[in-house]
Length: 502
Image 1 (spheres, one colour):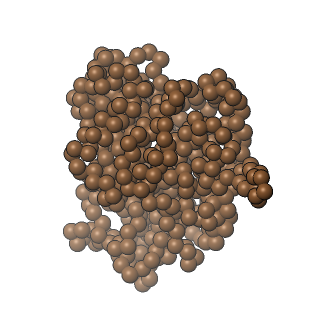
Image 2: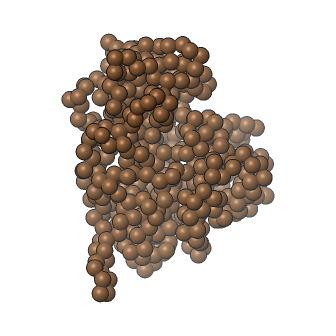
Image 3: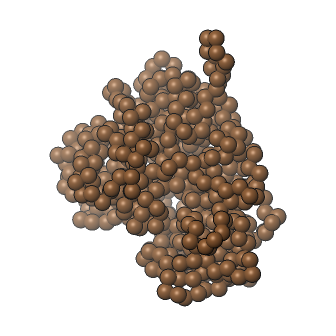
């Protein structure tokens, strides 16, 4: 079988590598850093351990399928998955709070009605019904099939927005996340809840198409899961599955360019000048023009597709706390600000938000802390990337960490007094670790908006060069990255006849 070179050891790239190796190919992964896992990093200090990337796993079926297709041991034998219940607690600016159960539509509706009143649960339930229709319409072409050259099926928004009648004006339908919140949910707290899902994926609610309704639908339908020991354990399990399938890893090896011969990809050249020949090259990092100079590669069928929006990053505060984690503590709490519009304008305008949406993670996992008299807590906010904001400025980093801690006090009363140690990670660290420009985090692909929120197709204009991971179809997020790996492997193994996973 063929020799295949994979650039990068992120989750999408490793998912592709494992599947290709099982198909009989000889696969070598070249990773610029000294480790695997991409955004699934880990910070360990003073007896505490933290995830530095995603803290929860949506759609675990994607990785269950990977493990079924690549070996005898299922995912649950390689990692321990724990369903997070409640899935999340939300604290709103007016002081109201609600805990939403994991994967229970009826439970969510009841919880919202009890906490917010005014038929809030019914409004949210009706919204999820419409989101479910959008899921049924777009799931296969958006997530399970290679990106079609014409893309017309994904240019139209699949979300069946309600018609909004206006006096002496034509009726309108919500076309963005923000409009769904204002016109269909009609409750500032429900609107903040929906905005929070978009922001969490790095999307601007004012611009993201209504089809972003799929994001809360997927979480509330399929649930949220925690990998015991931290999400880094999932990266370890996929890495070890690759090794078991004889995938070779070359760490600390930066690829300078893709070698082209006779009009197709023929291998990679490393920064030290070493050339490794290959019949196929899989790029598991953000596409950049200098990899194949002089060619525009990142679209099929004469159409170039770029991720929508200017990009955003993550500001993370890792807190080692004195005192035990109280019994009954919710794993994930989201603290919503009073002025979501101001936050959006700041983040997507290249500034820092005075009052950001803050996600607080408090895992009930003994491996994250030195003993039961301490607790490990992670605070995260979506922020502008490095560049528009200088995230290497130590005074700014300290001030913004204080901003997140102040906001998180609504979720962890007396938080500041409990802090024993703290560490800060910004888009500047993300850029250094992953090579992503500005430390930007790729959003998931979305249908609608004329295709403006799609990503580059997995197949490029250069035969033999394919794209995997969050910067390619179907976009960012752990589940989406795993899907991209399956699409790339299917394309290589089945060729032009491949029509998607089954």
